[in-house]
Length: 437
Image 1 (cartoon, helix red, strand yellow):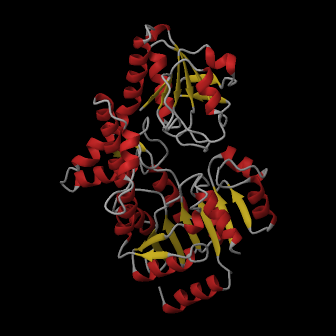
Image 2 (cartoon, helix red, strand yellow):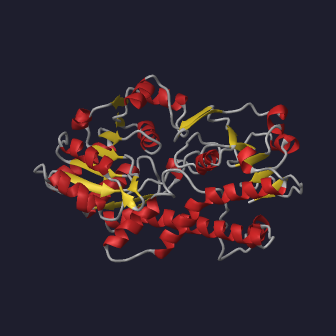
Image 3 (cartoon, helix red, strand yellow):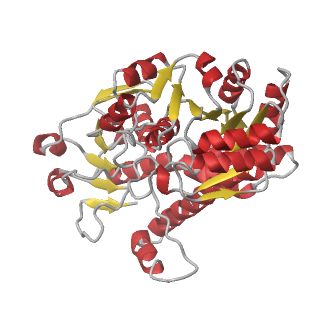
């Protein structure tokens, strides 16, 4: 690509004459699109999901981090337009891909959504455009998969388009670190691609870090989430060990956290959910296997994390047995269904696995979650109970699976028979009803 095209891109970006397309309007893409609209750019939002497009066009946000008010304000500017087809990309000079990357099966990545999006983009790509992949994937995807797909259409990198990778780092519901305050990592397939991507993101994010390649940027995200997976699995294992040894793991973590160096607290729980931690490290594990290396830490950590819901069910069964109640006759209330507190998101929620596991044991299972009035997923079809004295008192065991703020935990303690607290909401409270993870 000529210097004149490169500098024309920079000039248009500075003057906010660039149109930017965001492909995939989920928990990553929609907040990103809104941020660029706020920065004064013209943004095209593209999503194949008819229901999502319909909701957005009716000014209804389905994402925790984007309020209806913010969405209405973005649409009111007339600089945010939403489409279900890719033809609109012809008018865009920057295309950011934020589509899902699930697992096909255990340890096997599924990048079909990326491939599908790239093929559609290649048919509608304007000359001189910058394409950035944000979807989490294995190292080499941008160079080994996306680049060939684009060049198969007769396009050439650094002549007809630029290509870069920048890992999404959004933490849904985290008000302390919204998108704008999270440093952005960027890696281009060429220095020019990396520089353009950096300048695009600087429109909405102050700190942008350029790494040597797209492959390095892809690995950054996998390192971040593998770090979390391994440490959460480690503390989960220590929690199980502490229970066997009659130790309070929460007290131990609290005391260890007083060390001002060399220690970072992680906390046990019933498992991990969401799109990132349960899946992302397995992308790295899979790619490493193809390079002839087996990451024992990642595989072991994933196994421990995946076993936590069954461990919780085992603890429930033991508590019931101590009270001479058979699990098959038990009435159990699970408080919380989402994968994290205060976020209406059920993706890979360990609470769902706990409910499913209890149902398989023929328990009478109910749930309460102020954010999920009706739970219809994976064969579960339940309505959230009304939380009150009469409701709580009929259950043999109450399980705190998610520690949503705003719940009356004092009333839950007062009216429950037995409580298994997997989130330490009863920290410091000594009560024979309460049993902590």
